[in-house]
Length: 90
Image 1 (tube, rainbow, N blue to C red):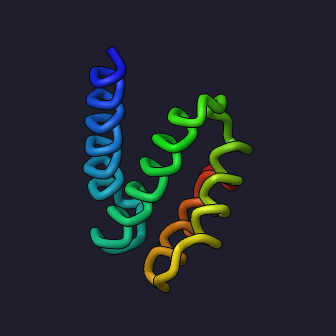
Image 2 (cartoon, rainbow, N blue to C red; image 1 turned 90 degrees about the horizontal axis):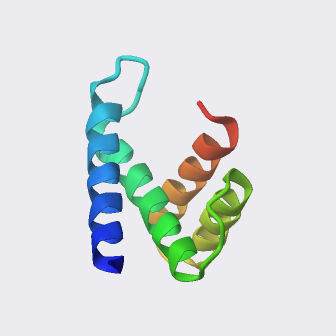
């Protein structure tokens, strides 16, 4: 059962990334969009594993935590941008 949930969550984030890349209002390159969607996906998977409710505040806190824990600059930027996107909803 758990594997099915993870599979569907993976498909959701794959499709979300594909949809983000097709929208004209999304003014960023494809690589950056994929990094942001990946950061959100990792944060959601970690929240599920920790059995924490997936709310906007919990997701932003997890993304900021991941940003602090990440050692490379690209990962920090992706988590920062993802947290801002989730926080503002834009």
